[in-house]
Length: 486
Ligand code: SAM
Ligand code: SF4
Image (cartoon, rainbow, N blue to C red; front, side, top):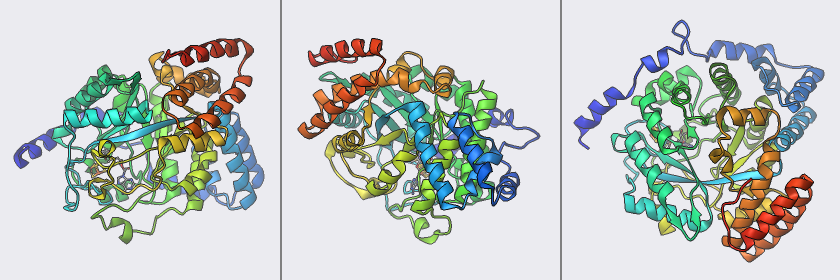
């Protein structure tokens, strides 16, 4: 693609009318001064007030900005402990002893933007640019299916060579791959903000969740750190509103922690969830991500900007406060975090983890580690099998279930059952079935042993009527049937 073509393409990406209509009096739903005021007004909270808010969250009600600001102001260690415990309880109430796993798949690292913190930014000369060809994509997906993966998040830089048509094509190819009974059943996408028309195209192909992180909700910081198409804060802020309008049911928000004050960003995420709920019949984000800034090859930003780096202790706090603020939203903790941190943060409300992660473009099929093709550096290199065993030893079943989506349990329907705390009742039986498939088809001897024991235990907690059906299905899976769900 010539430089001229890229420039003219860049000119036509943003359609202002597709976000201006959501703004009131030219203003968006993030008011920086209001957020700081709320954080100030609610400082030094009474323990009784904090406990009332914890109780409200435990009843699975979404918190209001003043309440979240109150939790963010807690200083007392014992109160934090109560918040941590409540976070774990809420997750279990809504999602049960289930964890969803997935793998990220980087498809292209060409990018026209210049985000200061990202290894893929256009001005980074130390990165090798690569877009997967059809053959290479197939090889990557096959390598992931062979590990036992059923869900992917496919990641793309912003570039005319990886526009919506290209993304649609890669989804189609991925869904079409079947090897020895294995297949990818759900593809989520992390890509640049798109127009309603482009999102409709992806909806028709069967996109899973569409994920766009705002990075920072703080207007001034956002402006300072972004150049290129991404410099338009509002095009990004309303990207998921457009997705919902286009009929993409499941949308995912996130903030990149380390760019600005972490308390401010938690408030921003809450306001984002509230605005989506308000405009789309009570349906907020399907998941929230809270990546922490990582060093990246050829990118001095991390070393030079330590002011807002989030400590492990604060990271635990922010995860727990998000859990209490939006009790029914999925929460994703990625392999950016080392094993020790994942160990501590997992019980604070996390619902999804990636394992066997390799974020170099083209690295799964080659089994190679290539920092010069990576966007940032990852810290948990455990395989899927190791990850699943680790979870099983904690009594957590890894779910590969995607039945919910294929049965239309998305968007409004999903939120409704999530808010009533019923996801886990509906999903545990299917989680057990997909877990059994994994144990038979992909697990090591060691993992199989731990896993089979866990299935026995979990069967006991099922409703007696369902238990009979599931036991019957498990026998059919043992005899070779696959993809059974209730
Ligand atoms: N180009 C698209 C975009 O920016 O939305 C999607 C892909 S981008 C590679 C995915 C996410 O990676 C970004 O939204 C950002 O939050 C995260 N990211 C970028 N640089 C990072 C870094 N140095 N450490 C951790 N996460 C980073
Ligand atoms: Fe490009 Fe996304 Fe990286 Fe920004 S964060 S440089 S848009 S890949």
